[in-house]
Image 1 (tube, rainbow, N blue to C red):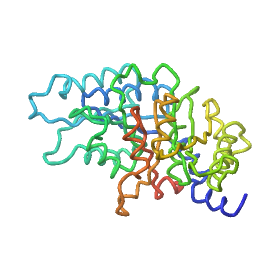
Image 2: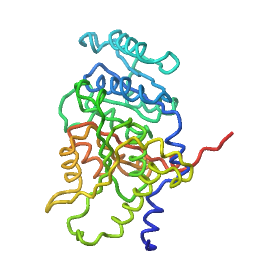
Image 3: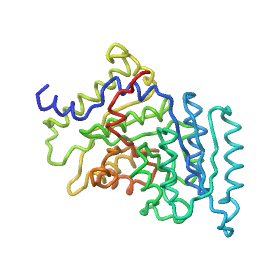
Image 4: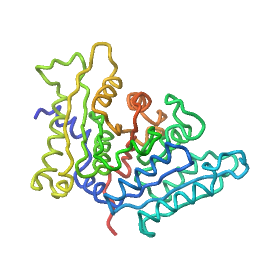
Length: 332
């Protein structure tokens, strides 16, 4: 391995001990529900699929209501949403694994801001939200509350675009496409794919090889990515190949590293989305650094945002925070 590859890997990696910590910690999920089809589909996938597979998970269902809106249809009102969530959770989870929080909306305060507070207080690992909420169906206009959570929530955001829960991967294997590159946020996206997946699920880690890169000779970046994921995959199949041996618990996932070609005149997001469509992916995973906003940047990079906006299916924006995801917790 060349010195350049070593530097690239060092900059793109999360320590093995921290990855073990992320993969084995108890997962806390917030489901933001508002009666819309997308938020309901996300809630039912989390409840019926994800939480039934991993018992080391806790769920908080959150709904913010406004009693002054008496014109809302029945299914969008507090009583209906609360009773529906309670009936479903009672049927599938023990009482100690879930809570339901229905709170009045504070005047002048966006729901997204309140959800960010919930994320901090609950120390959530993931939050599930509908892509557009109740105000519109335009898939090219992301909901303002989703943007608020991505900007300030500092946890991975599961963005549901599928309005029909029957089409979600509940009683069938799920297909994940992970957009990867040379950065730790992409590594966090792969780790999140492992955390959200179940036995038999397919995970394709996809790197778009630039059009100008010769197929007969891999660049230093391509070689570094290959080396990184070969290490992950070997650790999943052989306990002796990973320092703690804990990666083997994910050996029942079907993982694959793909170097997808970029066509002439095709942008990288379009190439990634093209692959995801052909693969019929249920979720596309992209990574973002949670501290971008503090540095004066957009909450999510232009490539990742373009993928989220262009892909018709569900997306997960994996939030990587160097202050938490890159540092081992101090044992008391």
